[in-house]
Structure formats: structure tokens, C-alpha cells
Image 1 (cartoon, rainbow, N blue to C red):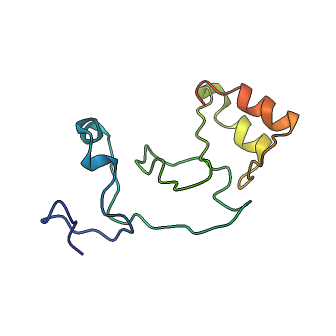
Image 2 (cartoon, helix red, strand yellow):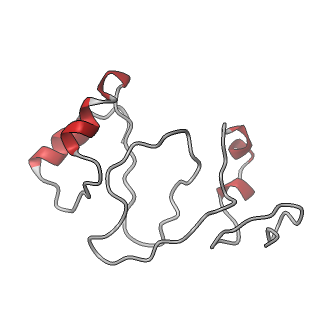
Length: 109
């Protein structure tokens, strides 16, 4: 479909607008992917588990409820943290001491 605000842009998305439409800083991102912005409908305890993004995506914070945790670990830990935590792990509240320790090692949370 045509984007509701940018009529010469074709998109497959579940949202009418995103951050790209509201801030000029978004245009400085190396990749802003909004052509296929889908939707995830879940329930308590569901969501996307721990994973490493393959590039600097723009799919930030499209949560309507719940929490989205974003962490950046030091470059030196780029392989150890995912191996220790395990791909797909979902962090549930309250966090375990082990989960708190992993997050404490992040540079940005």
C-alpha cells in the first residue's frame, strides 16, 4: 500500500506512522526499515527472546504494552554474553540474580 503520509513510498506495515515520520534524526540512521513493519500479538510471558541484531535496524519501541529491553554490551563481550544467556531467552520479572548480573555488564540498558 502507499504510505499514509508519504504517498510515493510503498510499504507493508501495520502502523500508519513511526518515529521516522516525526524526527529528522531518523534520516541519519544507516538503515531505516519500515517497509515491512509487522505486528506481534502476544500475552504475558511471550515476546521476542534474547537475540543479536545483524545490523543497526530501526525497529525500535513499537510496544503498546509491556516492556522492550534493549541492551548494548561492550565489544569484547559480543560473543560471551549471547553464549551465556542463550539465544531466545525471555527475561521475566522479577529478574533472577543471574539475569541481573548479565544486564549489569551492559554498557547501555
